[in-house]
Structures are given as structure tokens and as C-alpha cells.
Image 1 (cartoon, rainbow, N blue to C red):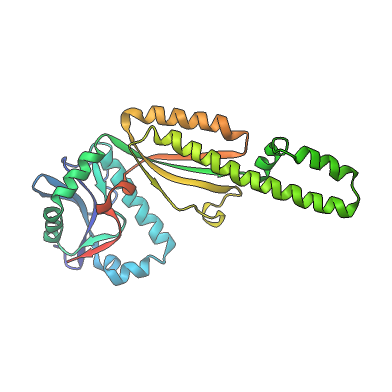
Image 2: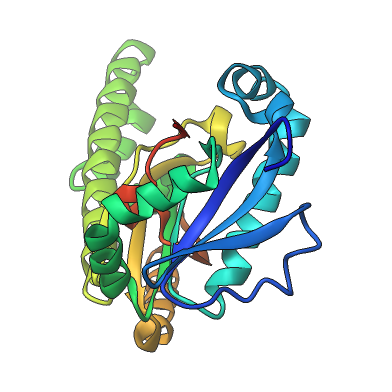
Length: 270
């Protein structure tokens, strides 16, 4: 062990990891073997990754961006030739023996999870809607709105004000119900093509940096043999709801972070 170094864990697999395509990304990338399990690791500086310094560095956006991108690229490339359990950024062990202890203690769970994940990919789907575009598409469909529009044209200003307020209330209620129905339908048909699902929190506009609003944020575990069907269903939904103001953001394939309890959270072990 190099003085002042720690062991950084990327992922675990049951197959000998192919490191050639990623070993240039970090110094001293290798794997630790224990009882048929392989942990892909590298040595990192304690001055960057011990608990105290890692917490400080997490406030450095440029440092985080570079390190997280490298972490994700390593896991994704290893995943191309082996089923993996990906570990979250910042999973650190003091020694190689600590890694072996973890592999021994969780061997049954690791093998069970790898068996569950074999032949699958994680795909993320976020659905957004343009409120004004949806309102426009509903304005001729909501019962009573065309009649109110006619009444507004022939009413005195005072009455027209209250009619416009009533119109807006009816339209907002219709938007809310329509979004619920469209989101539920999209979730249902995509779920039929997946083996596991995880709903995630909706992100505000500040996080998405989009003008439209998020109505669904879901990750799907999809069998590789059904990915084409999954994406075709998504294309159908885009056609079905696109003119109503909905847009679909699909990303993948990703390492199955959302379907591995073992990989959750950061750790400083031993």
C-alpha cells in the first residue's frame, strides 16, 4: 500500500474485469479478487479522499465534475463486457483487506443481485409538459369553455372579469387531470416492457434548466432483449402526446445504480 493512499471502489462483478479500455483514466487501476468476485478499484490520495478532505472537495464543482465523470466512465466501460454492481461515487476503503472483508460479508447478496441484473440495462425517462401549449390544446376540448368564451365577448367588463376567472379555474383543473392521466398512461405502458421500476423525485426548473415542467421521473430496469421494444413504446408516446405539449427525455443504458441496494450511499470503511 502506498503511503497516504486509500482504496476507491468502482464496481463488483463475477467476471474478470476488462481494464484495458479504462486503465488510462486513473492511476493504479486494478481489481481485488475474493471467492470468485472481482472488485474494480484504484488507489487514491488520502489528501483528496479521506472523510474530512472528501467533504471539503465536494464543494468544489470542477473537482466533482471531473471525478464523477471518470467514475461513471470506468463503470460504464466495465459494464460493456460484464454484469456489474456499480458503487456510488466516493466509496472508500482503508485497505485491500477491508475490501475483501466486504466481499466476504456480502457475497450472497452480491451474487443474488448480479443474478437479478444479468442481461439487463437501466434506462431513465423524464417527462415534461409545456403548460401553455397544453392549455391551448384543451381550450376547445373542456366542456363549457367555448360557451364561456362566447359569453366573455358579449359581457360587460365586470362580468367578463369573473367569467375569465372561471374559465382559468376550469382550464387549470383540466390541465391537472390531463397531466395525471397522461403520466399514468405513460408509466403503465413503459412498465410493461421493464422488469423493475423506481420512481424518483420530480426536479424543479432550477435543476433541469428547462422552461417546461417535469411530471414524471422514473428509472426502468429493462432486459437487453426488450430494449428495442421499450424504445419503440417511448416513440409511440412521443407521437401520441407530443402535440399536446409533452416531451420525453430518455437516457441510457446506465449502470443499474437504482436497483442495487449494496451500492447506495458513500462509505469510509475500516
